[in-house]
View (tube, rainbow, N blue to C red):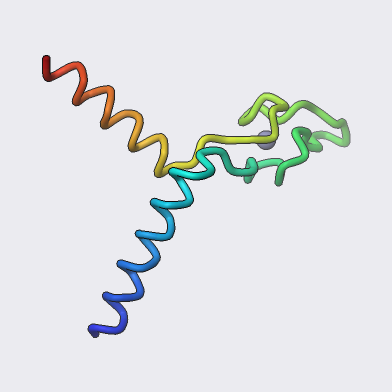
Length: 74
Ligand SMILES: [Zn+2]
């Protein structure tokens, strides 16, 4: 049980460092290509709009929390 908890804590810490160092990760929808195939036609990926990169979930959560905190405190 303790080993599993230590693994989760280590994973969270590593993910936090990853979010701090590299806030952008490759788009999962198009796998970093910027284009997806739909109806046998190549289209710009709607999720990243061809930018190939997406803000990581942890970083998005951090940004929204910071925005909320900044708006609520003076
Ligand atoms: Zn994409």
